[in-house]
Image (tube, rainbow, N blue to C red; front, top):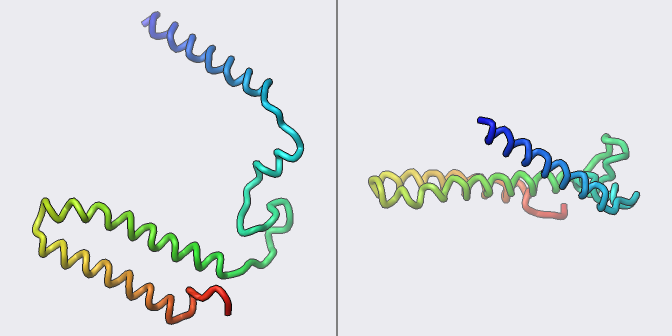
Length: 117
């Protein structure tokens, strides 16, 4: 028990020394503050939050998230084809992809995929 406490104490001391050295050696300037600030859609985060922004940024983000989730849900289906009933999973996969394609068609029909209007 004492050995474990000593090891934890040594780890704590070494990590604190390393953090202290990195703080001393780092070169921070006023311009680095701008690099560390969050950046969203080209707005200055220090200005008013009520500035209107283009809806296209939002729509592209939503489309990206939809297809990103689609990929995350399709990848686990691939190994399942070998483990369980092939026809059952083929029907489920086809239905899933059909729903996504209908959503893509709806977005295309509503001109959400056109950048200029």
